[in-house]
Length: 265
Image (cartoon, rainbow, N blue to C red):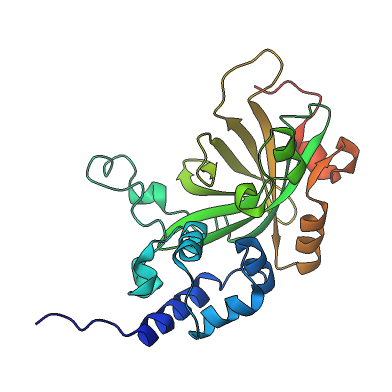
C-alpha cells in the first residue's frame, strides 16, 4: 500500500525539527540567520514550523549544512550529514573505520585557536578559530577565511564564500584533514600531532595548499592548534582577533611552536 503524502503542515514541522537539529551547535540563531542571509524573524518561523522557505532559500540552507532536500521528509539524524562520502566498495579496504573514526581523547571536539604564517603576506601571520565536531561517527572541522585574505584574491568576502569545512582522519601519530571552501576547486591538507604541554591542549604540524608552484609564494607552512575547551572568553577573543597579525602578536607558545626562523622541512 503506498505511503500517504505528507501534508504541508507535516512538511513544515519536519523541516523545522531538522533545522533546529542542524542549528544545535551554532553559537546563536542570530549569527546563523545572518550567515545564511535570512531575516531573523523569518528564520524563527522556519524553526517553529509556521513557514517554509522558497526553493532558492531551501537550496542555500541545504548547501550550507551539506544535506539534501530529504530534510523535508526524514529526520536529519537518520539522513546523516556527509555520510559515506569516502566510503564505498572501491575504498573500503583502504579508508577503513580506524582511519575515519577519530577518538575524542585524540582530537577533542570544540573550538581551537590556530596560527600559521600567511601565504599571501609573507611577513605576517594568520590566526583564527575553527570548530571541530562529530557527526555520524566522523569528525569534521569548520572555520572562516579572513575577509581581507579573500579580497586580496578577488574573491567575494561574504560568509558563504569565506566558510571552509574539512574531514578529519586518524593517522598513526596524529590527524590529517582535507579542507575546502564551498564549491571550491582547490583544497588544503592539514597534518597535526599532539605536543607535550602542561594542559596537553596543543597540536603542531603543517598545512599544504593545492596550488601550482611559483618562485614567490610558498605552498606549505607550519601550523599550530590550541584547544580552547569551554573557555568562552578565549573563544570570543579568538573570534574577534582572527586575521592577519605580526609574529609578536601571537601567543608566546604559538611563536615557539611555529619556529619562524627555522627552515620548514
